[in-house]
Length: 336
Image (tube, rainbow, N blue to C red):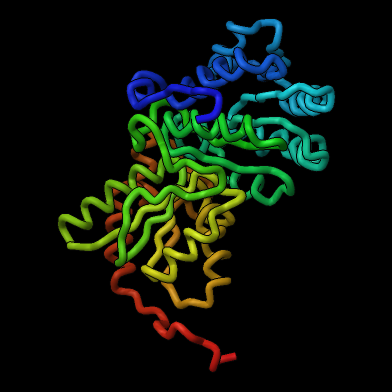
């Protein structure tokens, strides 16, 4: 990795995903004095406090004023600094939506936004703190890159990629620990490119964030119990999305299941459908995530099961789509 970051799965076991972010930011901060940090009374919760303790003169706590915080970050970026702004995903994508769009994205400013406690990972905090719409909102903003790592180690790679990219970036993190997907290094990590974690020919799970580990578990169960060959793609960059890998999966497996801790409207599943429409191939698509409703309250693992996208839900969905028909004609020219 550029910059010599050295995180491994050992760190990911001992640190939450957000803590890995904080430690990675400190490493980058030691290399680049233009990096500054901002939070809105959530430094400890979002783990940018590690950076604040290391560089107190380069950290700004703006109080409970998220909209002001993003306006300030825009000004700092115009002054030649690189702000990393940390808050809960709900407060970034929803409360400060206009400031991100107009102050930051419209001017294509070099601001890095870290939205923690995303999706249902803040389960017991309640629906107001579940951000299940942020991908849908933010991937529609011109100039903004949207990333969602699968675990702590990949979060470090995403932070490094955000640092290397000139322009605004949103990184979506969970609260607490993530199941380990990657061990040691990720030699295949490339900005804007999916990681193929399993090869397969019968169907493909296309997953992001906490959905990746569950898709992998389901792929192993389906191989053992059903004899299925299941491909698994990790979409760590939702925008720009890897259209080539998605189109290849659609062409070669024809059965696609998307897995995301997000509303199924305008999230990963919709992005995959958009790509699928350009392939002119018949295929089956099932979107797993949160339906068109405000989420219920509970512990994250219980909520994942409730909404049917834990590993058991992924297995059930795969068995369902294996019995769905699709147009197998590879050449639809005669129909136009």
